[in-house]
Length: 283
Image 1 (spheres, rainbow, N blue to C red):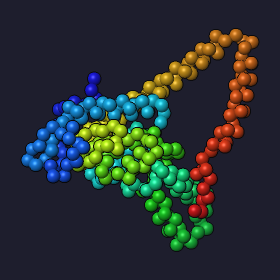
Image 2 (image 1 turned 30 degrees about the vertical axis):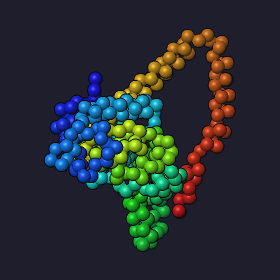
Image 3 (image 1 turned 180 degrees about the vertical axis):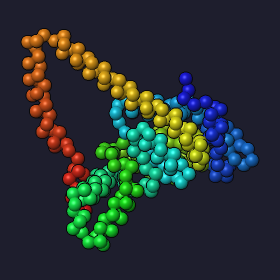
Image 4 (image 1 turned 90 degrees about the horizontal axis):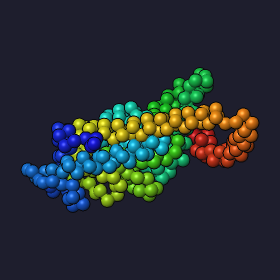
């Protein structure tokens, strides 16, 4: 069953494209007709594309991976922040930090700096600073929070990007393409879909249009997260049952083997610790 329907998208205004003179010919397959100089998007194709994108997002979420939502347009940023927060995914709604994906370790250093300032606030170090130093650090913390606070929990590169208005967020799309990260994008009639892996042809300027598409995609992500939880619960139950059914004399041998595996894995995990976490506090 489709996650959205024609009437729902029509009511939200997803069918309105841009002026005919501003169109991108690459979007021709998704355009139904033209009325009063404005292109009308074929919503039947939009319904199909939303389902395709939702299935991809669901599979990514089922694997326990992160999806980064990107949209800095004034009229849609609040909706993006609300939907992404509700499902525990990172998002960027302020200016896209150049090199956020291609130079990810540096971005992690900036996030680390933010957490170091928080530690200074709690351990009493701020009491030894002058008013001027205190003001400078507080302003720096506020600026970091505004630009990077929403990605503080993103400890590794995202597995996918969900972009609202691929024309405005072209730098984010280029960085994702360079790293081979799949891009799901809401693409209007004035944009080029060639760099987008999963195109959702729709109006990317209207809040209602973006909201109805995000609702469908976020519902799919929640399904993926719930399925992952169910799979983990089943695995734990199966392990517990195996322990009950296992002969008593076999248990010490299996425990010793598991302990040896853990000891062998510990040095490797220490070597793979991200270098970004070692950034000094006073950068």
